[in-house]
Image (cartoon, rainbow, N blue to C red; front, side, top):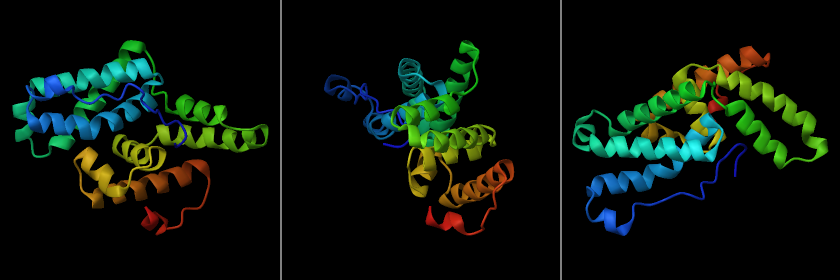
Length: 192
């Protein structure tokens, strides 16, 4: 498991009773995206209960507008926008900023020894710098590096092309290297 990763014990598939009533495409989409959406929401909100409530709200909303969602140019892009909107709305209700810095750092701290504390403190600066990226760069960095998804998975989840994901990674690396005062070496992102 990666730092800050939420292992959703409440990861639920659509029950067999509901699966027979719900649209097959919705059931499949829910099965494919539910866990990833929970992990993303947890990184943003900082607690499993809020993450689960938000993701449940997202899928309830998607079910209500499912026919229209299928007509969108990108179902995944539409659903990702709905997830982001619901997370942002919950953060506003809670009167907080994203919890990435605290969530990722404290998850790492729980697993660390005293010798690693200095390294973790430097990671806190990295997490704070990530939180300052543009919206798309931020999402790509979270999904690719903190949650461990490959470029194609990130592209599919966000409803964008793999080339766009790679472009956001390059831009994020430039921005992070500038903020953190480290040299960016063009071409490093090819391993992603």
